[in-house]
Image (cartoon, rainbow, N blue to C red; front, side, top):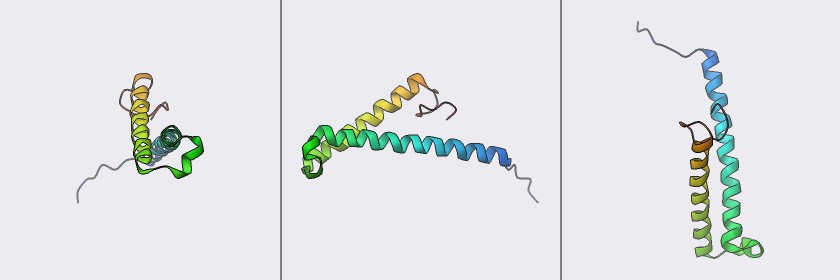
Length: 88
């Protein structure tokens, strides 16, 4: 029989909690940045009638915003994480 090194239940719960916090932050940040991208690219009044190129621009703005957020998180947070939350 092989001797497997399994994590303790505390490690599994801590890892799951960290993952959930990181995931929640990323989902919220993506929603905010994507919504801002649509508002900037199409304009608040035309937000629900955006053209193809306005939609592409919104995607580019959202991607750029996510990149900036990740770089700021590295500058102000943990050097090994793209999260701004401490301990993630």
